[in-house]
Image (cartoon, rainbow, N blue to C red):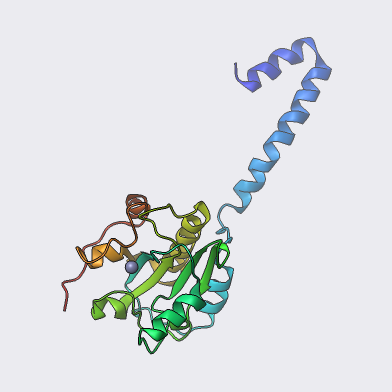
Length: 212
Ligand SMILES: [Zn+2]
């Protein structure tokens, strides 16, 4: 029996019960109504800093064409730690990725750290293909996803970041891929437990350009 049927039946026998039911119904309906009112606006949980920083940058619409997701292949680390490692490895611009998404160990769970290459709008250094480094935004999730899974907050942060970049900055022409698709046979990154098919379902799967 639907709740409206129930109410109609009760009005015939008990007016007080009817009024009580009506009150309960309107109480239980109000959160859903409130949600419906706000659902057109994006909910910002992880990307506040990214939005603030990016809105101040002058970025040509042709600057970026791909998002390339990675794992760090180690459970520890954050933007500063990886940045030092990459400098020591001789990368003059330091941190190879544009964004790091923390796992709660050395930065917040689902926290998005913005690398200097994003702030200066420099090419990435995260794949072996220089043509892809020039047009690929590198996003690295902290963790080794051959062994463990990304946290729910890391995946939520990744999606929120991609939605922001694709929805409000470059639109749907910004395509999604992961490291091992850029470098088949060279790497397992971002690991077997990265939600690859889920992400391709959400953002499509496009053919990579021929290596130049
Ligand atoms: Zn990688």
